[in-house]
Image 1 (cartoon, one colour):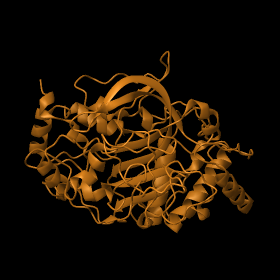
Image 2 (cartoon, one colour):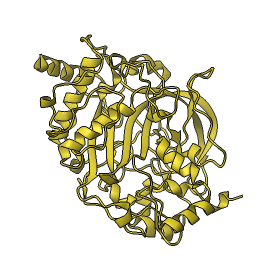
Image 3 (cartoon, rainbow, N blue to C red):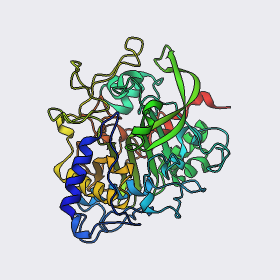
Image 4 (cartoon, rainbow, N blue to C red):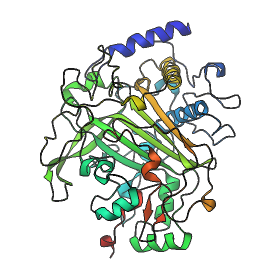
Length: 459
């Protein structure tokens, strides 16, 4: 039976494309479905992944091997993409696995109920979570670059000192964008779980004076354990394609602005907002635990984003790759020169190819999701890689000035084609170890979110 399911899954996966797809045949589903532990190489003492709202604990098996961490990543992905409840950051425990990822269900997931970076760093208290409002929950999204949390207006010498290397490259060519093969740009958002956002709000770290004083007093800003940051990449789902694409993407509704141009700093000038349907194409999950104080860095993508260089599947219509294009892959557009609507040719570089072990795990998890709910959109997502510290360093033992220690972070090849499109040769810690605040370079726990806090916002 398992062989039959696997064969059927491969056939159905090949049939889907970025633009359309056929409905899957129904399979028996059941609540809380999981495969036997023997099916997963997750370590002798680790529970295998299952379709559940329960976030995995930082157990004794974490940080023992790459395969264990791959399973840990999938368990985080499954839980954080459960439907949210009426309480921010809390799953809807009345929802069942048989409905997990139902097409056309636009309600927010657990991570989508987290506060956005704009809410966290607003001077006024963020609005209450209101899933049951008259119009339902509607988020606003206004970032066209995954790196917009790094302040592009900072002087180049300071950026180079903080980040190292080619600043323009790290900044994705001064805030450039990614356009899919339909001619629509990708939108990004950053969110923090309640533990992290409460820490920022309670200590008034949205205020530059408070942030500087706190960093000096504590020799850095160190997040509480179990802090989680999420970075997501979304593509526009054209309304005339909604009925077909809703079967293959996690889709959310959002208010999205028009882009009227760019200012002298190459930052976008936004116009009026309108409601759009967005399909999830990339998801970063970073989580700080006792055994991973340097965070566990987990990244996922939609299966049809782009091929690995030299391994194009002619049966797949990719979202960010055109086999007929003669454009050089992974070239960042230039503000003021290139059209927002010109598709960017994207490939996954060979050094970042998804490993055979992760490919096998992905197939197992996708089959498990499908067995739970044959219609689930989550069966069309894949783990790309997980980065974790083999020799973790406790906060108290870490450097008190940037750069921070990396804790023996492994592996060295990790990139999401929707978020590190133009810098796939870099890895998370190349930049994040340099995250800091103030002239003293007090570290900010591998996070660049505090670069949103600027002196000019002081009152």
